[in-house]
Image (cartoon, rainbow, N blue to C red; front, side, top):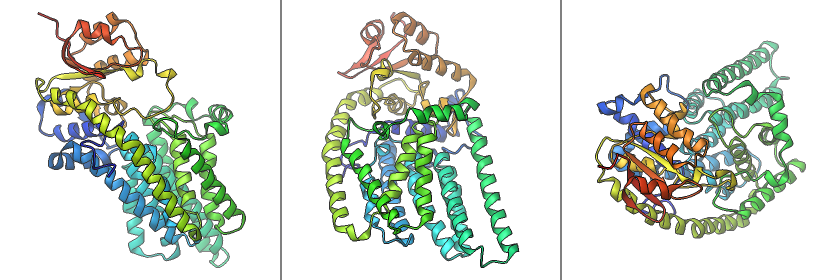
Length: 481
């Protein structure tokens, strides 16, 4: 209901994913796109959503495509979590997955990460089952899941390798006394090979993301750890201050630690939870273009912990899940309907723009952002929807500029895109500087969000307004004649 009731399921990064998929598909046929974009070779890890979007959007359109992504996420996480709980053999409740099903990353529209979480849970359950009852079919399925996970999200792929390594080592320790010496050596050789291959893949991608040695060095990690406190453990991107989630996460962790102390959960699973919490405290929150690393580690940790709640609590867990889902619905559905009403005039005007023109955005949320609390801002990339509707070339795509997705700017457009990005990175407040920067680029249309410290009143007076609402202005920046 939350996903399909609004005319659009609006998320923060959803428009960027849709636009990247549109460009990826169009590069094969639209000549005007080939002057500005190129496909990345080899394809980077964050590719699955782009590939799926390129297949789905021509058939279903952009609106339905994002709703399909959200629905697949729900099915994958619910199904994968239920399967994982059933194979862990520790009398756990599969209902626990519904406590964090509607987590903030769903509303942030981090679709590669969201889909990867479901694949991670399914893959982890398959790994445990394969260790319990090895078979060629399960091994082949694990290879398929591993490949899919790599091309979905590198961070979750790394987490999957970590958990698999812990489970393999635990299994090897259990069986080492029963095996011949040669079999033991072979097992640990395979474990070492898996670790080495995974480490090489992850390191290569981190280097390609321009992660410097300082970002992954010990001094930075220790400094980051020193800044952590109990008050900062809830680092989720969220709508406002949802203290209910903080209390719920703490309660789940306390309950699971209690079960671990009583020996109700095998030590190998406790080691997995400990590894996620350890990395949560010591990992930097940003590495290259990867952001909110701590929040993602915390989410994986609390999801696994929720799957270790005892099955004898099923009645209470089910009631709590129902209340929580209703609370999310009551809290977020009105926001979705209101955001759609705010966006409708802008999208209606975008369909009347001259086709194939270069576009950019000046999102006021970036100006004065240091004073904002961490949160989800559904209009940050809304200009991507305008560009998609008018078949425009956007110079404000955070994904294409990052070089972490399967589409990248060519040099001719990359410099202009960086020029636009520098305006909000420096939070330029001079109208003349902004106007001159736009004039020096090939931009024809600009979407302005009337927020923050962006001097939007001066900008709107200088440019020809196509449509203006309480929140946005769509302008033509050609010199007045």
